[in-house]
Image (tube, rainbow, N blue to C red; front, side):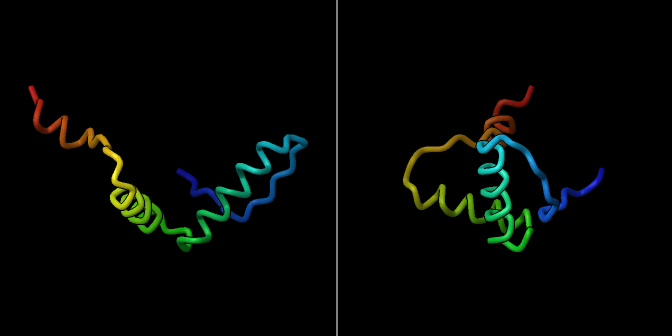
Length: 65
């Protein structure tokens, strides 16, 4: 499977896609293009939010058939 190039240049007349791609690029750059750091940060923000979340991995282990 080929890795995505975060610096690839795309051109479209769709401003929504341009905005989504710019946001994706900024998020990827903010964690050094490291997926582990990206998810660690997301888990930390989720934990600090105080909002309930669902962990399907735990649910599946508890309800294995």
